[in-house]
Every structure is written in C-alpha cells, then in structure tokens.
Length: 108
View 1 (cartoon, rainbow, N blue to C red):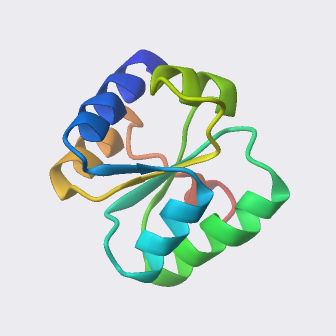
View 2: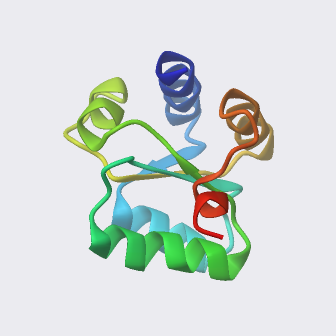
C-alpha cells in the first residue's frame, strides 16, 4: 500500500497538484485549495494541531500515510510530515488505496 501511495503522490507532485510540508499545506488549506491531506504516521503533536485540526475544520479529508522519513524519501525530499493534494481525482485515488479509512475517522 505504501508504494502505491507514494507513486500517486509522486505523480501529483510532478503535475504540480501536490504541496509538500506543513507551511504549504496550511496555506493551501486556508485558501480552500486542497481535496485531501496526507499526514505522516509519526507526525508531531504540533503538526497534528496545525494541519489536522485545520483540515477537519475545513472539511478536508485527512489520510494517515507512512512515517515522515518514508513519505519524504518517496517524494525525493527530507522527512515530510504533511502533504496536501489539490486534484480531486488524485484525492479519490488515494482514498481508494487507503480503503476509505481516514486518519480523522480513527479519532472520531
């Protein structure tokens, strides 16, 4: 599953439909431009507070991805705690890979 997630995110990154990093994700969430957010499995409490809470408030699905180091490596970056997806079709594809289980459902 992790490889499929990283492949989809990599395609989105090359198509400029993915934003990487907490600051970029927060900016796009605030602007209402994201279809979903992928948060690293080991995201820090600060990321949880800044990204997950804002995404939930905006009604944007939150998906739990691989650990930050693996997420970043899969995108050719340093460890990454949050990735935002702008494209709705890509977000639906990720949701299918995740099996419809979202990170925000686990704590509801």
